[in-house]
Image (cartoon, rainbow, N blue to C red):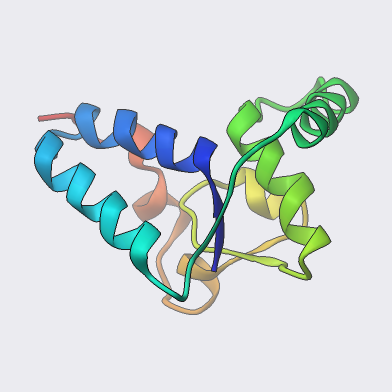
Length: 117
């Protein structure tokens, strides 16, 4: 699995909004980074700039910079699947594993529409 430090940062913010304890979120990130199955790519200027170019090319979309980083990076590594709840990945041609393999509906995966605790 490939992820970026931008995704890790986004996770911390999302966990906070969803009411996950700070300690629990940080333990999860520590475990993730320690896993030999996970490659964390640290975003450098070249990748950041490529993602910004993608955002400029897709002005009709509401992609986040974090998503654009993933859209640029993962194809370079031969990845076309995403473990994501974000429909933007499908718009960019990725297989969203949570819908394709596990049968979740788009409504079930749209976490933004759920009440926050």
